[in-house]
Image (cartoon, rainbow, N blue to C red; front, side):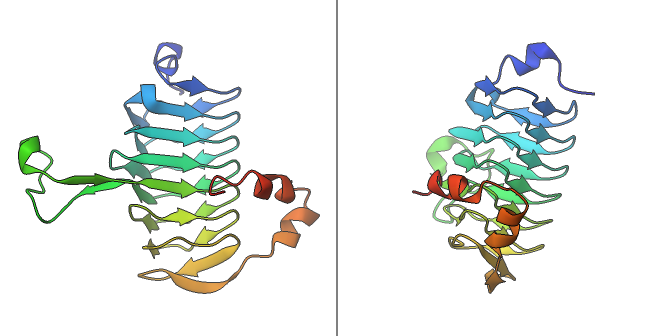
Length: 188
């Protein structure tokens, strides 16, 4: 089952062929844009925060979350796999850290996270505030991303470190418009 049309109208923008499943938890839908042919699975949590822009052909898998109140930009044909976490902001240790504390006691820092075109955030990987995945980059399963991962690199571990590069020519051979997406990088 998909979200009803009355809910979908609350989103900032919804492209053609978008699927948002009924049990996806969507907070602040008015700050969320979803591009053509993208899919948001049941049991994920999307917090619009300042802004959440999901490109075309993106899959946000079950049990993943985009949280923290900041900004997240996800490029075309990117993927946020099962259980992955994207954290766009967090409470700081120089103040009360409970979200139930009065705002004057808290110190929340918001950031922007970019998951660029063709990038892949694998199962149970975590992106910390202010990080990014370049075009075609991969954060391997269980990784904790603490700094930007350059285009076409595969990083793994806690904290994530370079493992190897991804073969962009293999995607080109399959007909993926790599050069076009590289030219439209969200990090440019």
